[in-house]
Image 1 (tube, rainbow, N blue to C red):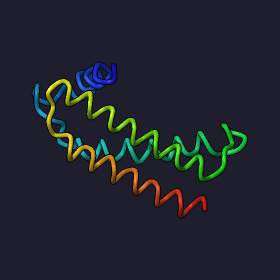
Image 2: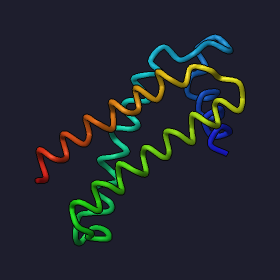
Image 3: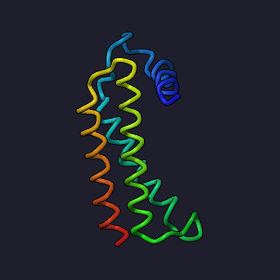
Image 4: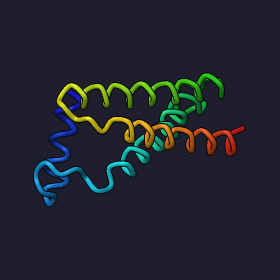
Length: 109
């Protein structure tokens, strides 16, 4: 399912790239999605009045865990269809998560 959505977005959003060529900013996209995902999940899970209002620690760990899970599932689905450049994608995901963690700890602690 995730792969079908990814292929659909790629087909319509990146139609100007040659077929079969990787997006030139793929690692930036992985970093950005992981970074923004952690921050948005943290905000949705933890801020009182807007959402569940859970503690800082639970919100923080939940957001990080969910994005790690999403990144791994996406790379496994890529591996199942024959894509083999998972290592650098996971590194970019990890860096996005780490930067988001540092910013959250600096701003909300």
